[in-house]
Image (cartoon, rainbow, N blue to C red):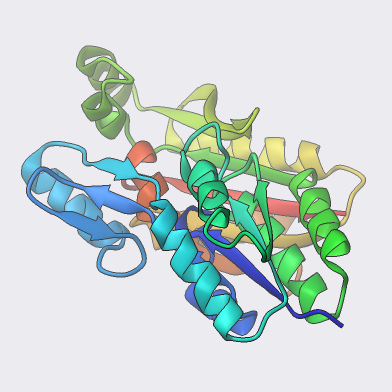
Length: 283
């Protein structure tokens, strides 16, 4: 029976304890401010990210891991005695991470490495990684490990509510005047993943109504299906995420094991502080 290692990147929003449980190697995204760079999951988290942003009044840029970072992860896995590697990356439509992971394979021409474009992000990607890791831990062949990951990717549903458009205005994706008006009118955009990108789905007046709408969208998405896994996401807003958990699990049969996790700096920088969301995996 071949031993298979699972590699991913920190845009998967996977909690450290779950990654450690399955020996999943997470290659970090880099956060670049004008005078310094940080490594997601190593020396920066969402709290520090927004402390710096609010102090500098400017958003950082994010960088995909270089091929050398994936090569280091691959080399470490092979040194641990694995026979093959499955690497599941954040959507290629939002990051060059997938390309870096593929390029790194060239440094191991005689090794068995498969790189998968998740076309997903955050715990949508994370659930694909967990599906692969569980299959690998149960002795599945590499083809089955990949199949389980891809199947999970087709069964994930993500909805998130932005707290403010302030940070989108900093990025230039929304005009400052429009963002100011939206915040004045208490408009809360709802985001989802469409075609491999985090896109605006709806604009709702007031946070309460936006959360109610997320509950409606979630119920519709899982209608007639069982919920296998659920994760609640947030950027510096764990209270809001817990509130969403309480409301959702009052109207839907949540599984006993619930994941509560940070959105992660590589993604939070694009959504802004205060965002809360839910990701569900259905069967």
